[in-house]
Image (tube, rainbow, N blue to C red; front, side, top):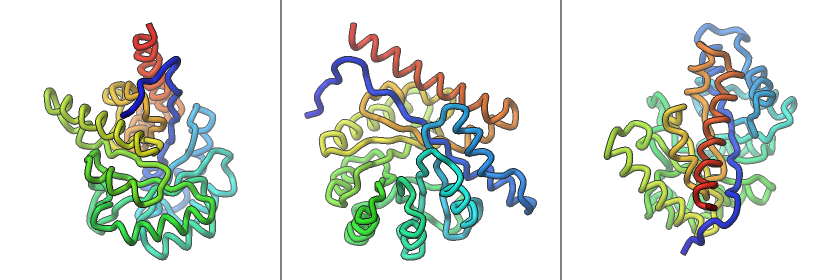
Length: 258
């Protein structure tokens, strides 16, 4: 049973996903805007890490981007990728701080839901072991479902990242139901010994409630921040997100400690 948090709650880390800076670049070709420059701005704005998804179809982040990020940023690099032999070899070559294993479908616009850890268990066990043997932290991107959490517990990963898309898309009572589901699965995953992260679809309006879940230690947010950057600048968007998540965590921590 998860123990209540005593004292100040742990601070939240913010990983900034720069995929869609590359999407804009690739829409026209050339070198602008540069994902590396976005990562450098994110670092100055208060990000704790940089996330980049190297897809099999290379629709946004490229191999050259991963090389540049690996060599030229000081923040931890979280490489999102599918569980394929090609991606495994790339990860073992660059040795990022972390790998987050995500599902991929050729025609999807963005990642559609979490990994099927139950169906892919044997393959994921071997994949995770090879990454862990190289000193790479491994995360599994999963839906907040109890059966997926239970199955993830035998894979050998240190982290689970919960897909928050259904929560962000829901309205009214349905959103509250999704929030309860995330809370329950975070508690369950914590009891299994996982470090818990969250991401997908989070915005200024939705990040606060997820930040009140004490055992979530990291957010990975990208599309919304890149979209807001068009209107207010990337630096401003990241700082505002940072302030909202920190304030929500501090407010509920204070209430629980009172």
